[in-house]
Structure formats: structure tokens, C-alpha cells
Image (cartoon, rainbow, N blue to C red; front, top):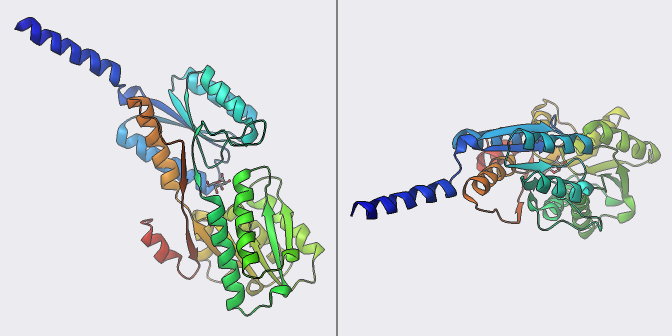
Length: 327
Ligand code: GLA
């Protein structure tokens, strides 16, 4: 009898030891390409919540270029991490990132920007969470078209600034989604001007948009769209700097983090008309939780998760945020 119980007990202990990693021993990296951007600050904030809830350690690292990213991965391994989540500064580093993670025996998940292989196709084996880029882009384009009509502008008098970052597939999908919706609403394709930004921040977008505005000084009204709020804010700042009045500008961004909210809070409306609010909670908290479950309990996350967005304008952003459970 005693030995029978002892055998069961021994089995239970062995099972528990094999199946569980103590939360306190778990270390997860969260690497982002642009740590100063509010979206990424929010992702980190929500990932921290997951860490506090489960009791694991979250290591937050900013990696603005490939070199920093590669050494960050080695560093995580040296610190004893078991996995990491990354928004890479360059999706073409895909195969290198996968190889480095494997060499260091680290579990890998990507967020926001999906890795691509040498052929330019997404690395579908890598677990990823991103936004529904085309659909969200369409929402942007539809919002722009609706507001053009509401203001009674003749579409032929409107120029569109496509703030672009074509080396990033999600950026292409977002702006192409916007263009598809604009065209469907009757917007003339020849009035869409490309403004390629060198980096995905507001300053680079401002520079790119300024070139377009200077080239087409005769255009009466302007609309702007791009990868994120920073891109559209850059375009809006450019219209201001060349002296176009705010009521002749409609910009709709993607994000809904602090940069957009601060703009809505300005007492005098700017050309930044709206944004599609996306969820840093899902991208930060959920990815961190998924990685934790993977490391702790061997539960591999879904290969691909695409998250939705909700349009918010200066006039209704507070209500939309409330509906989404933000603030
Ligand atoms: C990209 C952009 C960010 C943000 C995320 C959302 O990484 O650079 O600003 O829009 O996508 O997934």
C-alpha cells in the first residue's frame, strides 16, 4: 500500500517538474524598432501588465537597426531568457532573426511587422500578431471620402498625400487599402501623390510631404494618409508650414495613441481629422501572455492573429475610446 502511494506521488512530482516552469524563472524579451513612439510605449506598458500578473520577467529593448537587434537577441539568451517578441526595424532581416533565435534556443514571436524571406514572402511559420492592414486602410480611405463629400469639395480639386514606406508590407497594405476605398468613392487616381518617407516618424513624413506640397502648389484642398498617426501628423505639419489653412486639410491616421489624442485635444482643430484606433493591449498584453503560455506550459500560440481597428474623429474620439474600454 505504502509503495503504491509512493509510486503515484513520485509520478506526480516527476510530471509536475517536467510540465511546469516556475513563473519567476521565466524571462521574456520584448524588442521594438521605435521605442520613443507612443504605440510601442503602450505595447510595453501592456506587456508589463502581463508580466506583473503572471510573475515573469519582461526585458524591454529598443532596437532601431539590425545590428542592435542581433546583439539584443544574444543578450537575451545570455541573460537566460526563454523567448522574445519582436517588432523588427527591418522585415528583410527575417531569416537572420529566425536563425539567431534558433541558435540561442529562444522561442520567437513577431508583432506589428511580419518577417519576410529572401523572396519577399511572409515567413508564415513564425508566430505573428499584426493589424488587419488592408481593411483598416479601407476604413481610412472611406473616412476621407466621406469627409470630402461632407465638406462639398469637388474631388478634382483635391490632392492626396500618400505618405509611404514601401519596404514594409503592412505599410503598403494600409495605404493601398485607403486608395482602393478612395477610388471606389470616385477619387481621381491621378490626384494621389506619393511622399516616400525615409523613416517611419513624424519628421521624415513632414519632409516627404513638404516636397509634394511644393511641387503641387496649385492644389486647393488636401487629404493625407499613411502607415500610422506619425505619418499623417507629419503631412499635416507640412501643410501648416507652407501656410495651408486647417480647414483645407483632412488627415486620417492609424494608431490612436498619445500623438493622436494630443492632437484632438488642441483647442483649435488642425488638419488631423481622425484616426483608426488599434489595440496596443492586444499587441502588448496578449503577445506577452501567449509567449508566457508557450514557455511555461508548452502551449504554442496561433500562427497568425490579425487585430481590428475602430474609426475615431476629433468629434467622437472620447466616446469611441470609451466603447473600446480605453480610459
Ligand atoms: C507598424 C507601425 C506602427 C504601428 C504598428 C501597428 O509597426 O510602424 O506605428 O502602426 O505597425 O501594428
